[in-house]
Amino acid sequence: MAENRDILNDGFWRILQNENLNIVIYFIKMKNLIISLSMVTALLASCSPSSDKKTETNTSPDTQKEVASSQPEPVKNDPEPVEIPADFSTLVPIDVLNSKSPNVPDKNGIEFSGNCYSCDLASLSITKKQIRWTNVCDEKDTFEIDDFSYTTEENKTIFKTPERTYILTQIDKAPVYELVIEGKKLELKNKRISKYFTTKKALPLFTEHDCGDFEG
Image 1 (cartoon, rainbow, N blue to C red):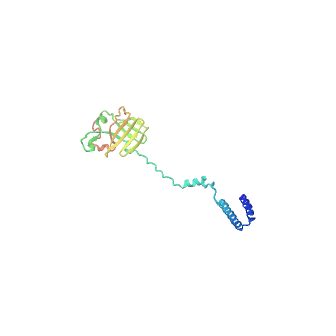
Image 2: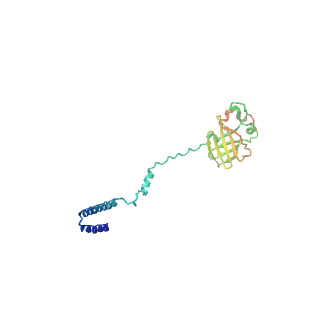
Image 3: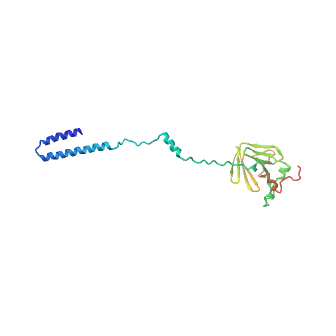
């Protein structure tokens, strides 16, 4: 801008020496206009924000913690623990004696041979800690399983061991349970596995529920 003013001043004095008054007046007006525009331009340039400035955001750790703490914590819904029915601790083997009978207590009952004569059937006891097969005539003759997990699905309770899956399904409200074993075949000496079971307390409801007068 200083260089421009020097040029204008030099030209101004030259024009003043000119005898034409109109040219002098015109030049003075143009000089004032140029000076005014230069000042306005300089003023605008000083007031405009720098393009290099960036918006600052407070990202201090304290602020982040406050924002995080304001978020509501999700509600944890822990699954309800699965309970093994208490009746499973005393399951006794039964068999289908009269398939044509619509009456469950007449249709099912104890197998006479396995319970009274050969004594080779196994009763079943299931608790949270153990699955135990026991000879119906000898309480000391047992086969025990401690390593297992279990789940329930409607009327089924499923027990899983490393070698097998035991599926116990209630098929009648008497109650009558059907047992299905999947996986490696289970063969136990003097502990034959029945397909059907009932609870010990429900056994007297069945027509054939004991050995009668048979003494073995």
